[in-house]
Structure formats: structure tokens, C-alpha cells
Length: 72
Image 1 (cartoon, rainbow, N blue to C red):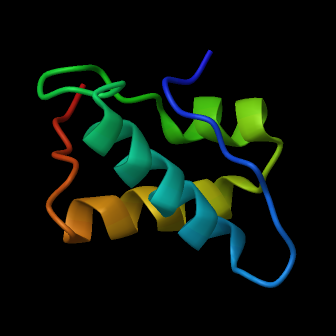
Image 2: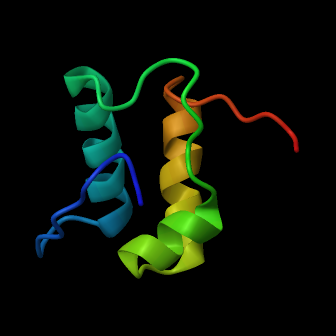
């Protein structure tokens, strides 16, 4: 189960909607510093989106400094 919920709406790119949902979860306190973030595979399976779309969302979050990727 994901720590954030996405309500997909037509018109906006899916990855942007995922990024918005994660930002909303951070602001609301559902996601905190140090929490494990789900893998790209988990995100794509839970939200039923293409893994490339999930990767694009995670890359955007890393680029914005909201996520830190650690190997392993």
C-alpha cells in the first residue's frame, strides 16, 4: 500500500499527478523524512501505470530534492 493516493484526472500528465500527490503527502505529514519510499515497480503496480511513467515521477521528485536515492 502506498503512503499517498492519486486521483487521476484527464488533461494533466500522469507523472505530474503522481508528483503532486507525493508533495501533498509530504505537506500533510503522511510522508516524513526517513520514510522508505516505494520502488518504481511497486508504484507502477499499485497505481496501474507504466513503469516508465513511475520512473519519470521519481526522477522529477529527486530533481526537486524531495527524494534521495540510495543504492540497495
